[in-house]
Image 1 (cartoon, rainbow over the protein chains, first blue to last red):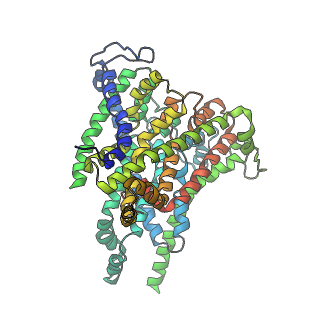
Image 2: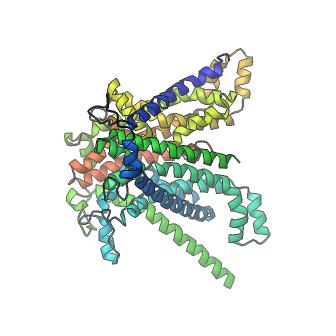
Image 3: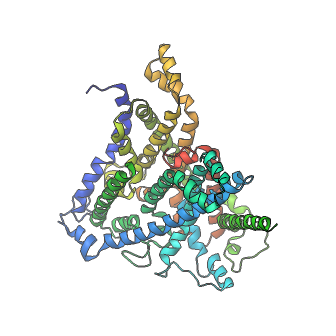
Length: 286
Length: 278
């Protein structure tokens, strides 16, 4: 094959991204079979499958964290999807205020997740936080991120606040782009609001909804900032109630100095994601 | 008459729901802003004081007090985010052009590039960490700029490709008939025509790099420490300075809000990697 201009043009991107695939993936697999730590990462002692055993069997690190991650992803993506769809449908019906409402509704996205985590941590503080104060005033149960049954719910709440606007924005832009004829025809035929939604809007909106769900799910799987800032993936250790897979790999490598075990968890994550991706692309390509 | 009242109450109910959501979105931000103009003691007073003298000194202190080391990290954040956005566009524009016009590499290449946007960054973290230690790229601006390319390049390639797909080929073709080479046509004709897309992509790259935390925490210690890392240190080191913290949050949110407003038209396309043309 002759190297032509179009190949030269993609070469810089391909080379840059190759640096981030070939080397890291091979090296990560190598590290996952060693006892690497910050002191001996250049020449780590061979550890056989020990790291995989602690991840999968003896400490069940990987599975416990995947369970947390999956629960988190299901909670936030479904809530964000339903809320975003609801808000988008409401705003779509508002005629004059659409523009200003849209600008206000995407406000949470412009806050860095780290800042949201920090603000969340302060507002939840038992003595000086505004949220426990309001809960006391209103006679509601007090939420605490140190409570094992509430921690994941609290982290999800912040994620939902931040990313519902993303779903809203995408679904709303899909609604605006809908063909007017279809909506008008449904109205002329005397279809009720619910029937119009089920039989006209939903089928037309399907591709938009799918794109939103896929992107949001991919981003939710990697969530790190908010659970890490609010309570370092705790309560509980090494795999706490909010230890998402990113938090686990970070903590294993840098807090517990078990780089080999962290690498093994990362290898397992690539395998799981690889399977999910190939299935998902097959399904979406159909 | 009955139908009319029903219609009115339904409309009223819809307005009620929208208002509730508006409060959910706006009140927390408003609360942080109020914290930022109280004194540090008032900021955490429970119950919150309802009337107080606004104290704007925190905003001034953030910039002029030596105590916070905020200026160097702000500078680092801006340099790294600008650098990564610029480098990403310089590398991705030719690639996007090639993929859009020649279908280079077919679907495989395009999806291989996209897969980087889908993979969690934590997968690159450990091997790149050891590599950076060996290469001396730890705690350098260029090191973090390169790391941010992992998510900025796929974003740029796909979003630019979607803008280029919309651009008629006639412009460059007529320029090439007039004796322009393909390469010249790309940079002299297509690049300027594509500028709204390029600006949108640059802002998005800047936005994601500026808000990034995991890589920034792993790959920097002091010299290249960014705002997000500084903010997380702020909480542990200066826990009594709540109002200053709130001021720094507001200070970071405002430019991001302006950016989002600038690219509002292209925002949906950018956030969905060009899959949905908002």
